[in-house]
Image (tube, rainbow over all chains, first blue to last red; front, side, top):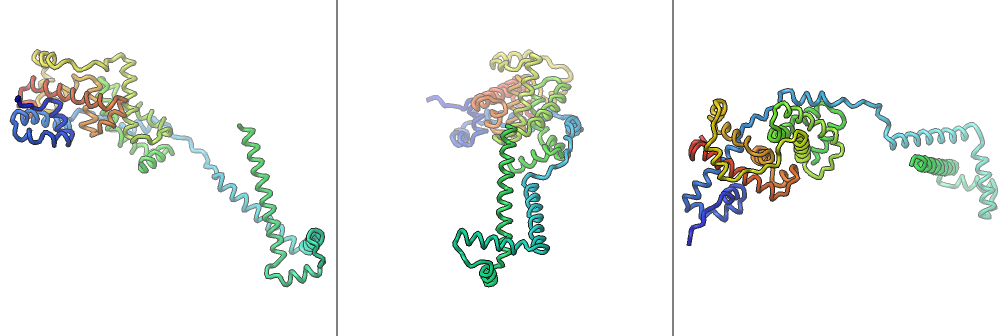
Length: 177
Length: 190
C-alpha cells in the first residue's frame, strides 16, 4: 500500500487547524518528506506574519482626517422635555399653593367653602348637621379638614390641567402628522 | 461592545480628540486593505482619507450587528472596489496555474532595485505578493497581519467563508512555489 503524504492543503490545515494537527501528528513525526514540506509552509507562515509591507500612512494622517471633517455646529442644548414638564408642574404647584394660602390668610374662603360643602353634603348625602355640626366635626377630626379640602382641590386642579395639556399635545401631534 | 458604543458616541458628539483616537485606532486596518487593493501610492492616501470620511458620515447608522472594525474594513474594501471599477483596473483575474507560474519565474529578469529589495525575506515576499491579484493579497494580509478569522474576512469581503479559505490556500501555495522556484529550497527564508 502506497504511503499517503500530506498535500499542500493538508500542510496549511495542519498549521491553522488544531483538529488537522491531531489527525496528522503521528504521520508527521515519522515522515521526513512531510516534515520538509511542512517546514516550507512554517517559514512562509512566519514570514507573512512579520511582513513589513510598507503600509505607512503619512505621520499626520489622523490630523488630516480630523481637519477634513467639519466641526458640528454647537446648538444651545434644549432642556430635556421631561425636565421642562417637571419644572412647569412645580411652578403650577407653587402658584396654586400660594393662591390657597392667600385665600386662607386674606379671605374667609374656607368658611364659605365649608358652608358650601356642608350644603352639598346635606343635599347629596342627607347630612343635616348644618354649619355648626361641620365645625364640631372639623374640630374632632384628627386631620385638619381645611388643609384636606385644599389638597383635594389642588389634586383635582392638577389632574384637570394635565389632561388638558395631554389633549393639546395629542392634537398638535395629529396636526403635525 | 460597550466601549465601542461610547467610542462612537464621543465621535458623533463632535469630540475632536476622540475622533483622532478613533482614526489612529483603525488606520492600520484601513491602510492594510487599501494598500493591498490599490496600486498607486498617491491614490492610497486619498482613499484612506475617504474611507474615514465615509465611516464618520455613516457612523450614526452603525447597528452593532458586527464588530466595528469589521464594518470599517467593509467600508474600506468597498471604497477600493469602487475605485478599481471606476479606473477599470483588474480585480477578478485568478491566480494562473502552477506550471505556468514556475515557467514565468524561471524566465524572470530582476532589475537592480528588485535585486536589492529581494536581499531579505520581507522584500522577496513583498515582491511576490505584489504579483497576486488584489483580492488574494488583501485576504492574505487580513489573515496573517491583522489576524482576522475566516468569518471576519468573509464579512469584510462579502465572500463565502469557503471561498476565503480557498483563496488563502491558493495564494500561499503560489507564494511558496514561486519563492522556492526563484531562490531555491534554502534561500527564500534567509
